[in-house]
Image (cartoon, rainbow, N blue to C red; front, side):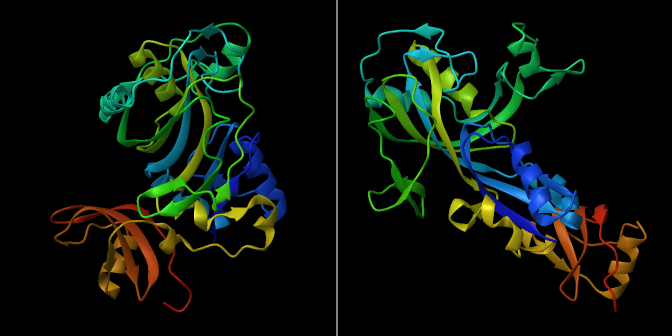
Length: 315
């Protein structure tokens, strides 16, 4: 215990947030379920103490974002960190053309990661090599983009909506809603506001670059807010400074898998590493009297333990 979703502030790395959480919670055991860049804000799910064992089951959760894609200016970092290293005169693009381009990025695909990323090749961090003026040969990664919804086209980031509220379809512009803090704009460039839902490992900075390329212009990510990570919505997050006193949720509530309520025999067999018969396929959570026993994979006939939890006192 516990799992806590925080609203990551601008200009902090995910590691910065973890370090601060360790101090505020008085523990060294804090992990997170998906990195956010320093210039991104929004949902960062932290797992504290014993709950660090559920990180592996949450890292591949779908993520939801609001992304500001600025056209006509490229940067080495692919975001608003800059500096601008490529420019082109861009009129405000045709909406139908933009929607057509965005539709072309839906589904499974290979995406080239940014040079300024934490990926490692041969023990070297890509961003460290990039800052030293070099490049690494980063292989394309298999990612999946589930939805890309154009919310508007604006003359600049500064001219785009500044307040948003949650809706059944996701976060949307709302003059009476919550203000988001974006990084300082690098100039006045036509900007697409896009609501995205993507699979694990997808770089929105790379998407911004690629959308620009598809439109024939350089582009960068002018701002990014993660509005959802798995079952955690931005509306349910806590401020980082309030982290010390937050109760959070337990491992069972944090895991977004179907639940099998086991009997004593099945629970014991799973804790012994056996494969009890049970006609279900896919990843499941197994409980005994409401307590978490294991995460398992079913093949339609038997269950295989992925991770087991210790027996609760009094079981």
